[in-house]
Image 1 (tube, rainbow, N blue to C red):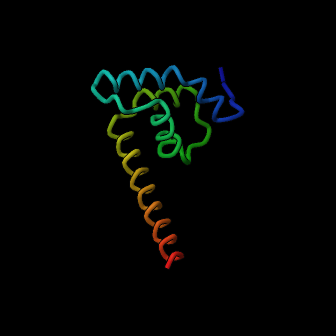
Image 2 (image 1 turned 45 degrees about the horizontal axis):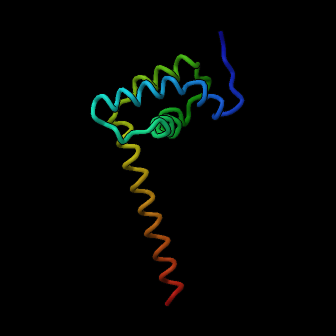
Image 3 (image 1 turned 90 degrees about the vertical axis):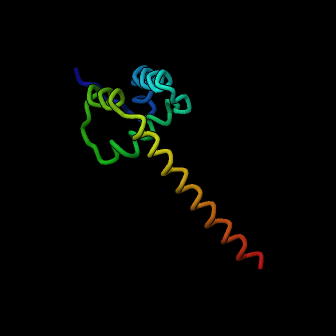
Length: 98
């Protein structure tokens, strides 16, 4: 049976049970800071960025097989990029003030 989704939100809702399972697995392993949306965003922005024609079974498999280290590295990079952008914005503001 093939599934087609009209939006990422619709797909997200469909795979939320698998995302919760993975989040709970991380919590049992002592990684309580990871949220469902962190896992989802990591996969969307890293694993599936250029993917085409993924089947629902592929998506669920990727969710269940993602490692804590993959999500952690994704979040660290995101924070690093946000810090760099914030610093750049501060420099622009300072430049305008002087």
